Amino acid sequence: MSDLRHAFERAAEDVKRLGTRPDNDTLLKLYALFKQGSEGDVHGEPPGFFDFVGTAKYEAWAKLRGTPSDEAMQHYIALVERLLP
Image 1: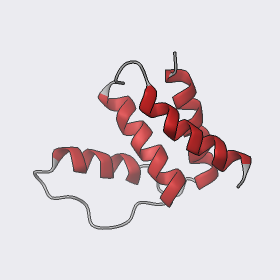
Image 2 (image 1 turned 30 degrees about the vertical axis):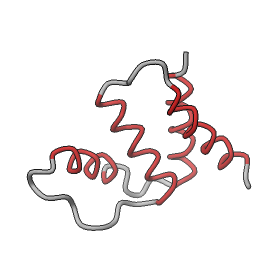
Image 3 (image 1 turned 45 degrees about the vertical axis):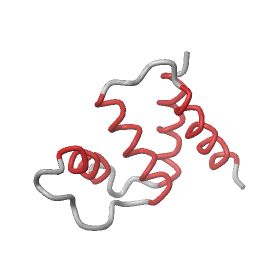
Image 4 (image 1 turned 60 degrees about the horizontal axis):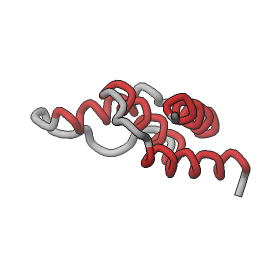
């Protein structure tokens, strides 16, 4: 396993242990960066009109379309490190 992948997975575990819940914008960034880093570009059908949370997540991920997975992983790791106490 590459060092980047290992650090990414460690950051994914660390984010579960944050002392306080991040604001919604930060949560969306974390979600989108994690999905882009782990799965690549957004895929599947967008959520239904009344699924506001699902739509917000889908749109946040879609904004990262074309971002290389390695770059998304690096941004995710950096964001988690900033959030840790």
